View (cartoon, rainbow, N blue to C red):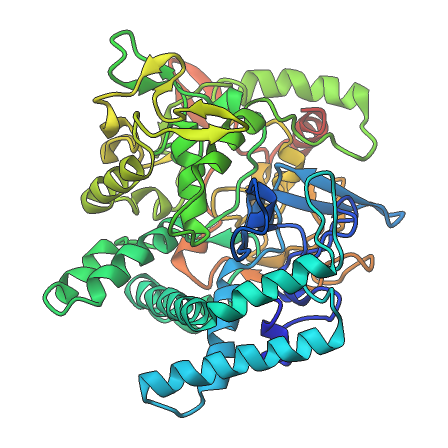
Length: 525
């Protein structure tokens, strides 16, 4: 990864952080770490860090550690929140562009591979000449010491296996690009070029997840016709979610212990068991062989990870007024362990229908092969079976619970609203910039600026106007046009609902004072 900007400096970012172009930032809390937040190094999880070539990969923090800028210039970090700047699609496109820059017009596969090997090894020599700590920057902590001697040993290991490693890297990168292009051709017709630029803070997770299977079938002449069926049948692009306080979304066992009820996790709750949700996230990031230990660790970490506290002032008296309105109109749906899937809110349902029968069966099989009830891993010296049970009940013979039946998730969950201030923009597709616009639908903008870091304290959401008011709008901010593609529609959650004789007010256009009171209360959650 560190060699990419040496090979194609015009494609990548600054010398200090070449991944700033895809929205990854240097986190000052990681003092001296050689890569930006969101990139992990395999040596940090090995008993003998020098036993193998170090690999780098995206981590949970790439999507789920965000930032908000205060007016005084202070930056607040949101652990478990949303990195509204991260653009995973653009990373894949830039890697592919780098490879194509090297290959040029060469069509012979063997010559292409040699050109890539020569380019990477040439860049490696350039890196070595510039510094004997070019890659690791002499980073050390209580577990590792990545000094010049360590770096020299790693370079030697890499050089010995260069042909294999570079060949695998280039093939995977090309497959990722080709498979994603096929996904765009199938579900984003007329929008492919814009989609290839990516949308910071957003991804078609299910589509990316299925690209690996698509490529496996595409390479076989006899099953190539079958490949496109593996890809979802509708667009699935959504905003990243916050992942804190997972205990409030936790599903429960039915009385017979044969099904899971009263909870979900992601937008439509189709993967109710946290361990498998975490594995799905790793696979979405492109890890063909996910580290089960990471997913198991995340289950414990996220269960009660607290939501980030609102960092600005709150009018407590107004918030108390808003609490009464919230309890009357919002709390019934946005309560912990509400597993109900709502399909009657006039929102775009594309995302909720991407998991067809084939994807569900393939996903269940893939997840179970990766982590079955018998799979054992070493967690800090303790043999652990992270997929053996859920909430005290054995998962043997229950693999069909890994992904819930399709008919149960054609809609969206109403999640608890802890830290809702930091989850802007709103709705599953991020089409509404602030809570105010959610509650007052007749003022929703057709387009707005997304991925800014400064904050609109009055309307509750990241600053969204066309003209920045501070220097912290973020270089990754962009105009989000809700009319540009059907899945970006900003309709929904805009009409009052009556159930069991009780009217739940969703449209506050005729009571903006009430809307502002609710907003003030939401700041306290």
